[in-house]
Image (cartoon, rainbow, N blue to C red; front, side, top):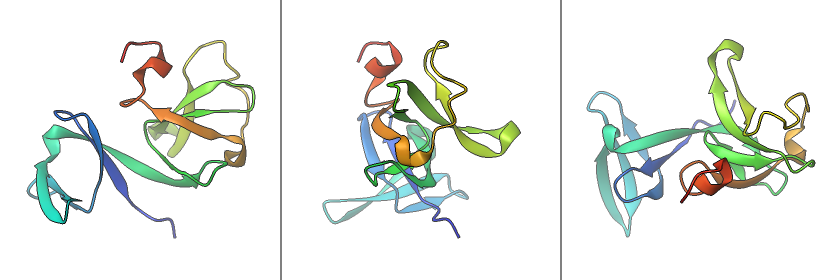
Length: 123
């Protein structure tokens, strides 16, 4: 069985947070910071789910991560409803979108929140 876990990008403070508990009834999540339990409204974060996979360095791959294949092409990890799976979406149209990369070949180089410059935008 795959491990279900999340991380959250705090929109106000622009910090990536490990999620401890998600309370969907009251629409908030709990994190631990400096031995304190902190509850944050879900509207103040962007949740990213762990894909259950790791990159070539053993790092956990989450939604929103930017990965690089052996050709140097960059992909954003996204959930694709039509395929019911996490997939890499090419950042540039001319990248090898037909490259059937094995996860063991991919390397996380950042994520869409902390590294917008990888998407062609400014930080």
